Length: 88
Image 1 (cartoon, rainbow, N blue to C red):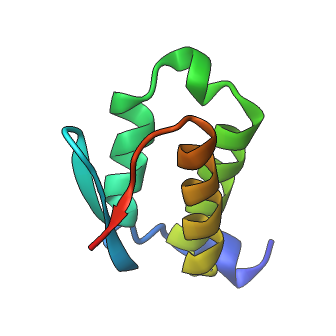
Image 2: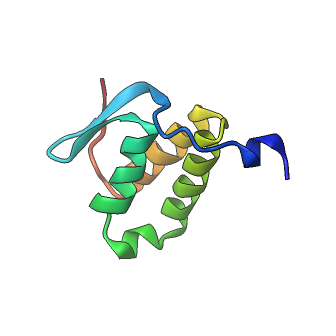
């Protein structure tokens, strides 16, 4: 097990740039992305490959991984779902 895998997740890490999903929420931290997935996505969406990938990248970023990997996969997933997403 690597040091990164043993590190406690830091969900308060800020995103490089906030993303606003109109009438839903503004994503500012990894915790916000986690809340979006857990509370605002229907279970059938969370089961889709793209959202499982976002969740994996999110978990890696919370343990010190690259934030850009989360942002890219999140923006792609939102685009595929036709969810408007506005950089702030």
